[in-house]
Image (cartoon, rainbow, N blue to C red):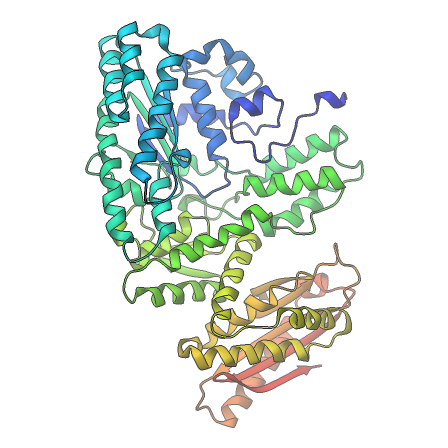
Length: 579
């Protein structure tokens, strides 16, 4: 096969026409176009970042745009829709907004929004100049108010019976900007900002034959309801569960393509790669009907991994792309929203999720900005931002879990920063002690250091006491040891271990030691007999876990250590390794 014919890896490429014209690999999603057409004329879809939203909506633009009819065969050759076109193919004049480009910061939000929309509407009238008379063309360009430009276009398009399609990427960017600003004025600002934005949607409602909007948050959606009440939110519609993101079949086919073209080494084990990627990038579900079905991969993370394999013939040393690692600031943004004394409650929710990996909630499909910190709304936002995903249906409620190791790292990084506000941990010494634990089997210094940090935090923050908080604290620091995959609450031999520290032998074959750690907690007033009872319980559980076939397979070739630590309040009451 000719090397020149090999498709590029579309990491960081957000436009469909760029993907197709510059010969990048494309995972076909065009079979969803007829489903969207049949669902409604006015649609909202919410998905986390890095799930291919921009490529998808720009594909819609290319398909429906009358100005791109001559490019249809080039852009869609080999794709499903080429052989199954709908009557709406290339039937519209399309206004395409990407509101992530419409401004930043609260101070000039309305001004920059108008400025951006004016520029896009000028581009629209220039592109479709042949459809409009010279007078309309000149009036649109001369107008300096975006809403007035829209009215001019709408008036002439209606008179000439043109079909108009509005596509908006990052429709909720303003809400996210304001949330990230935080502060005590956030709710007043949200209400104010949604006011001018709502005025545009009153125009949209009367102007466009079809509208498709996509974003990451439902907050703006609710604020627009009074002005834009014909929209239909398809975010949890089972028909569209797999529309964004990669299925395992998609990933396998992609990797096989690059192996067939000689970009992956001839002996590359694709199944082994999938096994390595799955706990890091997989496990997303967006419809209750598919909770027990195949899960989805994060697009950007798969492409990040593939690019490294092609370039270096090995896995990336850091499984989490730095561009994603910074996303944990979303947790900071959500936790710091100022609304009286609810901040501590929000932190307790994040601590619970970090400690246990899951939480039960009533998923809200939308809510007004002023209610963003209410309990179920806050939990729902964690889901919409991709920080939780569906695990189990519980009637009207859903048990949500942290999707994968990539997101777990974001939680643990956030929690470390949070804990360090109270008492700092010497990270250099901690890393040295992690190496001792991994290569020499000397685990006591690391456990002691984390326990001391926990005690110091507890002296500042009384609320930290408790088993879940203890587990979350240990988890945040044990996760720094990248030589291991730290699996908390994993089912082993009909029980759930607190921590199974599996050595990453594929990357670090020299690791000589593996661990199961069981943490126990009793109240500060507990007696010695109660401590002894907890210690005995931990012994029994550790023996049970050690006999599990998963442990024997994953820890093969290492010395397995069974550790138990019993805390009485914030103090270690018992710490030992059992045979």
